[in-house]
Image (cartoon, rainbow, N blue to C red; front, side, top):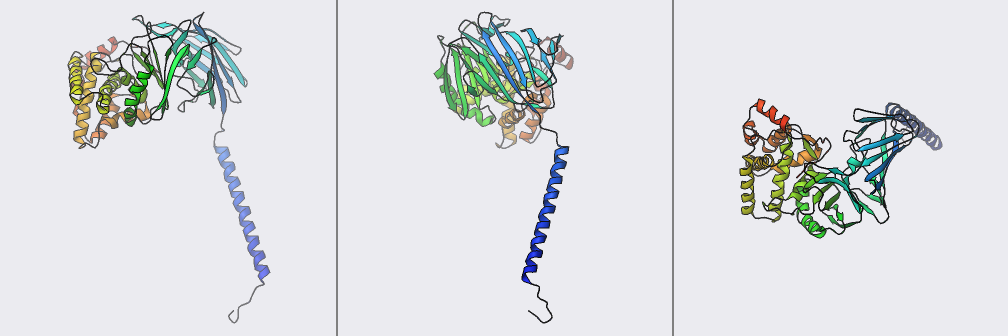
Length: 454
């Protein structure tokens, strides 16, 4: 200690330091409490409700008796159901319910609300095949048809959504969702506040084969007693799905493939996390394309086109139905080029790609455009990019695709404008002819569908 310094008692210093520490702690806690109160006031209250769909499958009436049950503190005040298909009958509810112009407006009240209706399962297409059918032994349909599109007026969201199936004794079920218990499924959709099931489903006396392929829980299901090659399909997927998932890393974690014989639709139909494929369809066709891979691309991308862009959706799927086989060694480079040449030649019968619905020659011509686009991107980027980057970008956001967006993504991958997507390469028609072609193009009246029919 230097001369002139005054030594304070040690005990007094400790008391002063301790008092200061306690004071600082009190002030910090007051500030944190104030901040928490501000956040609580400014933040919206977390609102939630539970949603249970119950469907009783009745082979005798060929209908499903459906109940939509809501419960919780913040049940939606109004729900609007789209009944345009005409397959929803006998709607009933204790709450106010109004039907008009192909819609049902349901006003709920209180903490619980229930709506019941019957759903006509059988649906026959113009060519005679069924895309939804029930027999005494089984039923195949889409769950997003069983439950119609519903918009909800609500400040909250469904935190727990389930689908419960009630069926005849001896029946089982398969859906592309996790099964909580027998015939009870957990339904999820992070993009929607009001959740409903989507994708294909099969119930009845069915046989299934299941495997984990590239981290996707894959299941092949079809009616018992039919000539269904479940194990062949699993082997084909083990061979090709890993390569497909390199392009579409957001491919669903669950995949259900439903297959059946006549009188079901003789082709492939994709849906959310699922697809239907007629039992007679070969895994690789005589022209070396694969309807199975084509539909899997639809599942992986989850995109649909506007009135002039369906060729993009179908062209990508058809291009990859060959490209994936080439990459996995399913076909040689020579066979690949031969198959592409045949598609390009067939595509010459399509005067324009800018139609509302792509099929046949339009899709063949679109696949040829995808091949040229892939070559152009690879050349412009010195092999550092390809059409894979474009497809991956589309699949990352899903939803609607337009020519403008497709061209922009392609130019980003190439680093320059792309000639393959110039208008003169897509159509020989003038703008007036294009408008007429769009009017004449058939439409399936979709809106929520993934992919197209094949």
